[in-house]
Length: 503
Image 1: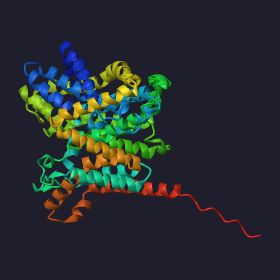
Image 2 (image 1 turned 60 degrees about the vertical axis):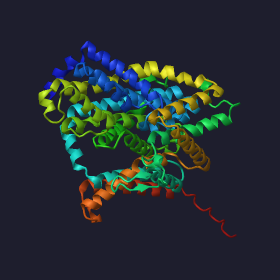
Image 3 (image 1 turned 135 degrees about the vertical axis):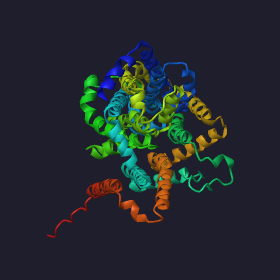
Image 4 (image 1 turned 45 degrees about the vertical axis):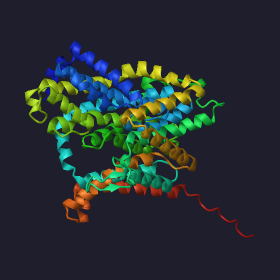
């Protein structure tokens, strides 16, 4: 295996391959930075154009777009509170507050380094541990996926926000929104009110842009005569430079990258879940957890390294077993088949230069982020903060409208976005965290479908949820999160004042 890796390196370092890596990464950053566009759309449109290319050049474009878009999605998430990609949800928690404090440049640089580190760790896992980690994928069944979804729902609802009850209610609201549409198990319509538009459910990107982008725009409009951003104190470089970032965040990067790799090998889990779980773990480990959500760069480091570590790891079941881990992995399999290559175990022996070359390309594009993201994109996009709010508000609204309309080409989506925006604005005013709502939309259907599949397979024997070792391990982690939060709440409860003794 390692000999094949070394033999594939000269192929990847050819001029055509290097150009494809550079162009793909640049396109990925731009696509991620534009709300409404996503790497799946870009790769799907690009694949037919690569039919006449060498397979290694086509896969280089895919690798560049994939890794570049992960960092690109953090740019509007940090500057405008608009997740450029669904995986950038957790980046908004601390990225946007840092921008409000005049630390947008530091936030962007932290995101760039975190994305690069996560991508590098993920690529190394793909290159060295692919066959072993592929076996872990086969060990997960519906019961395990159910507990993964429950763990994500409960942990984010408990750890995000100061009021646990409001966090749980927000998660419940997200689950209800996620249940709208056709039931994947029975085919019955739910909460559609006989409306054709609701049959397919709510589009995730529309919910994201509505909940996260519209409320801050309304706040900017309210403060049109005030300085919404602290642009005067804008600084692009962290204290201590890049070495300072490494010293401060290497523990967070290590932990979050491992979480991202673990989530990435599970088909269908996705970078959004990896980012949220990484953020939760960073907050749970931090001694200053109360600063998370108010502009703590550790939150950005955790979220970005977590979602980028999912990238190459999602390719592990795809390349070794022919099971796509996500939509982009499915497109990679399609790219291989377009060029006459059959995914699966035999791919490693029949076309080692291509499969191991793609692994090198995932590694090199992650490294390329430091050049294109750190030196070009950070400095360029950070200048958005220099715009006056009177110009920034309509510009942001136009970007949101174009992005939402691009998804389906349906004007109704714009009204739905506005409705979710007003709901998000109201929830913000009432002190309800928005992150659990989004996670409920993501993980609620996943938990429900896998629970029902488990019951169907086990013939309604609910004990199967607690008999498999992996399920028990996830349940134990869930208990630790709940008990630690309960203990922290008890410790923070104010003690009653002692009554003065009688004379």
